[in-house]
Amino acid sequence: MKKLLLPLTSLLSGVALLVLGTGLLFAVIGAQAAAANFSVLVTGLINSGYFAGFVFGTYACPQIIRRFGHIRAFAAMASVASTLPLLHALWLNAGFWAALRFTNGVCLVGLYIVVESWLNVVAPSSHRGKVFAAYMAVSGVAMALGQWLILVGDRFGFVPFAMVSILFSFALLPITLTPVNEPEPMPVPKLGLLKLYATSPIGVIGAVASGLLTGAFYSLGHVFGERVGLSEVGIATFMAATILGGAAFQWPVGHLSDQNDRRWVLFGVCVSGVVVAMLGFYWALAAPWALILLGIIYGGLTFTIYGLSVAHVNDLISRDRVLEVTGGLLLLHGVGATLGPALAGGFMDWLGPGSLLLYFAGVLALLAVAVWRLIRLLPLNRGEPGQKDAYVVMGAGSQAVLKLDPRGPEDEAAPP
Image (cartoon, rainbow, N blue to C red; front, side):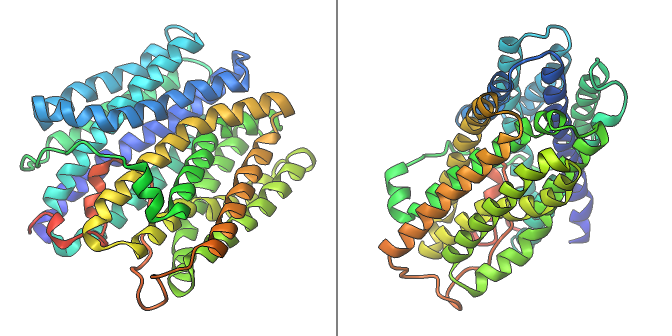
């Protein structure tokens, strides 16, 4: 394992820089769109372009990689990705920015596919669970730190876009200088919605709802914080605290779901999330700084929804279907994340900026009702304590990283 430490560290360092840049770009677009008096709906649509590009790239990028090879495809997409942030500063136009965000999503998912494929080559089968956990931890912490980077320099000028470009460019150094064998071509994912829904309605609904929540949060959290009166430092801290809370709560909530019926744990998370979001709606007007504490709790609850949904589905299927099913749930999460910013933006334009929390409460309430009804209608045939796979921390990524999921079939992992 020691000889693999350097390539693993290099690849994870590159991922950290990519995610740092992604987090900063979300923040600066929210800040500058608000300063340009874009409506919240328009801001949401701009960032929806990123998630739409991410979903589209999941299908398109494997074809590009198969045709040109991992290294050439990586170099081309990295070059475009590092140029796109600078183009935002050249023309402040909503349609232009939406197109840039879409292209950015396509390029970044392509970069993630290549890096995660290389991680699969480097990681031995016996350590893939540890590598998977490290990857998710690095991604979560980097996304949180990216929120604070907007405090460096003039957040309304050219500097933050230049910083994003620099981070994307620097991400190439540890990745391209790591000697890694060429991975196997990445297959194009197949999304059989009816079959997936038949396997687990709760898993499908939970994955979409998780996307609706996280897509809206990343896209409009900065606009929300600014319009309810938080300072620049307060906005960055609110965003980072929510993300870090989501990372910290994954393990206790996951352990609780390992010991109990995951469906009821998911129901409890949703109901608790509704309460926290409604308290936040009140405090957003009365005491905006209290949102930071509530953000920790809210993130700790809602960021577990996707992981709980995936874990519940994996309790119901055979091991040889893990990659297929989890990949489908990831795409559904992306579809939800594409719709979320636009829906939440329209909601905020209609009822005011604080209503982002009402949107969160509404999505969580609908999910809670759906889970409660499905629990009553559908008996649980598998997944009793002692028969379930362990909960695994999950987050957004490409299809390639799913091969590191320790719940997958052993022969899917790279050999030592």
